[in-house]
Image (tube, rainbow, N blue to C red; front, side, top):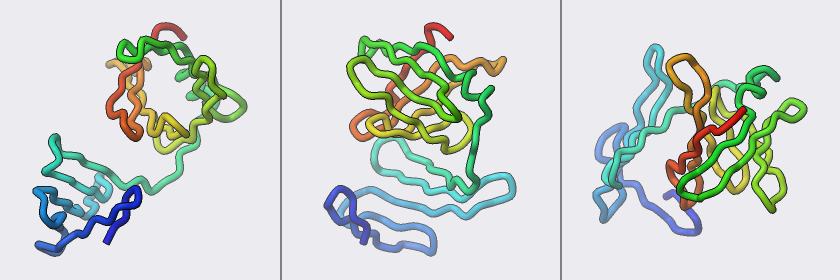
Length: 149
């Protein structure tokens, strides 16, 4: 039994690695790691399938890597601009009229922070940062485009 925001979800096994949520079309499959690919969890039956990968190593970005992410980013959906700044050995999001949000590195080009959840950076073919997406409670795939460094 798994608790999520105060609610319980019972997973019923249908095979060694596959489970269903009783009374729904939701299926959860635990896919073992393979050479060159970490363990994954596949969730289907909730709209677009969701694939999550296990993160096993810690990531500590260099000051150069952090500075490459710094800049102003705008969201057409929010009609606002957020500033990302490299501070000390970390990264913060500056949102107008809010305290800075400290971002913790998860893996290359992905960070997590209060309110914003997971922030994942996108790059162009040359490796230049073009924007990021926010995936937080109530906001999935919220896009921010880089407007200046």
